[in-house]
Image (cartoon, rainbow, N blue to C red; front, side, top):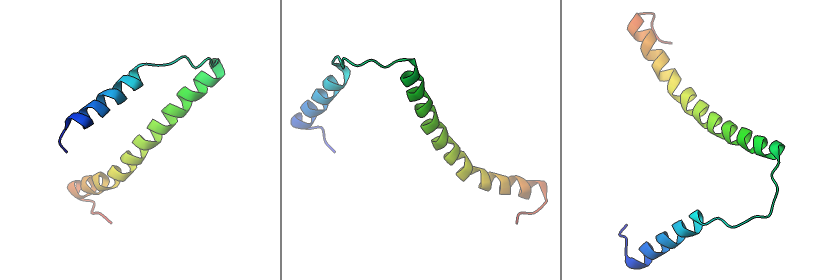
Length: 72
């Protein structure tokens, strides 16, 4: 994908819109803030746990094969 001038302009405009926050006039108290942080940690944790669980079984078989117990 080449960065033609219209695409470059669109990318620059999108970046500028993302870094220029507007006032939301909303109150997020400590409960909502901690809840949002908890949800973010939960999402990241579940993704990492999913990746770990997919990668663990082949490593477990490799370790058993190296130790000589045989893999099932």
